[in-house]
Length: 290
Image (cartoon, rainbow, N blue to C red):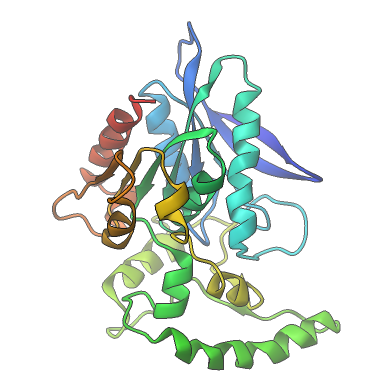
């Protein structure tokens, strides 16, 4: 593992490069996109390291405004920026002499899966997409984690946060919301209770993840749809477990594959065996086609 810097226009992203032990020819490259609120040292590095052991050159990195990013604002969840981060990592991989520029793929975990799809729709240098516990952050913002909320009701939220965002622009301290409940209770969906255990306990807690997101992130996530136009532009082979995305892609994308590992829940694929190993093997095999 090597710490790296990834140039993205006028800013720099912090990344970790993983390579197979012996490189005798050009190899396929993989961009690994971390979840919303996560950092490169967590689940993204797990998949990056294990895929490198399968013969891929991989990069896990911190999104702009998160992790080791030194610019401002920090703790901003900006889906459009997250999508273009992926293309910056593709630029980096293409410049490595031991990476085949025609064999680069992207994998994303949780919201990173949605961002991976969003990037691949527009950047066809990416030859395949794989998603782990994929979430379209736009859908989850509008419809809630369980998909049972009414999107139109979120107008009230947008109106509510407009005032503190305006105050921030006038110099007051910014306000934040959380990615996962700080103190989950029995009413909290199981996957979010498990996510709180992952992010907020020694299980995977990291000093660069403080479970906070600028309030001004909400209008950005509300306005985003990772699956929009996927039926037209996401033509690359795609591996995922989202029923909604499968229904969108299946009529036109001959390379779409839906995979389900029995018994596995959302967070199991972050750090629990056998789910992580099975997922890595499934992805590694799927990417052999590029």
